[in-house]
Image: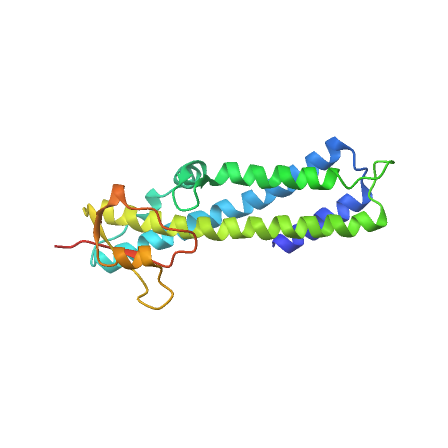
Length: 203
């Protein structure tokens, strides 16, 4: 889907004047479309994680994953993520604005893209979307953890157990946390790309 949006962006950009307002509006539109594409998918990720956690640890009772709504997703996207150490929405805007700056710096004196700069522009767009997709994957992990913990909390648990993958890739910090219990609202921050997971403390 992102490749389709990027190709469409490139076609439109090739036909357009590269004045400042045009570049800004086209990049804004591209990023807005990607954001609109992602939000319902984040919601599905959260609801699935909630439901799976509930079914595993609260068998025989219907889960209420529908309580997770677009506002729940928006709150996570606008909040500070201890794992990445930034606000998703602020980082999204920063990446968008850096792409605008990069593209605007490539205009020739006539305000258009020259042949050589067109290739540079495609490369700048590719780099920008690669960074964006890394951020998207990190948020999907955060969304999963937060939704699982919400399910545990809704089921009446107030502590969770930290689990590692128990292999040679586990870092020293996570290894020390393996098997430790933490209040749900006082969990230590994971590091980016952390593979650790939680289960509720049942006794």
